[in-house]
Image 1: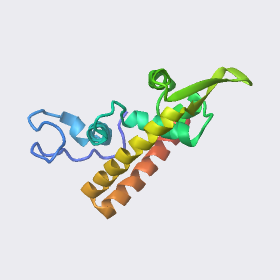
Image 2: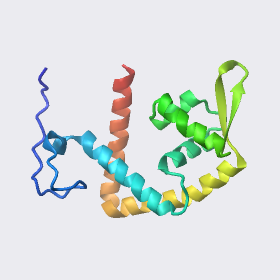
Image 3: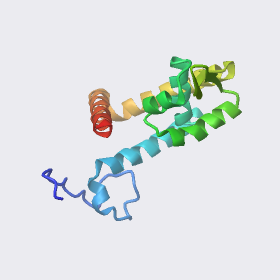
Length: 169
């Protein structure tokens, strides 16, 4: 089925891109989703570099923050808030529980669900990662400048809302 949306123009081979310029991208060079994925991967790498000697990553920080801000949150609610599928979140939670950063407590009213909470060690890890996350965010915003940062942030929120709505229908 053909789309009524016109195709984006092909990017020139020598375009400034975060990928190896010797690799032909084909139609990927025109896909927003491809560049979102590349940008996410590069952002995560930059976060790891910023965080330094910890082996906790940006995904861990997001999970620790969401649990810290919502003590007692269930894994299902956490996966929705984090935009991750529950099955990909389970290994992350298992790791955080094993490391003593998160506790799981069975919910009496629903024996299949667990309430998630940060442990004291988890709260400390979150505070340490927050310093790295704040600096990483400043670096991202500095790379774009004030106006472009605000516009990108606005557009990402619009896109996330539209995709959430589309997936729900």
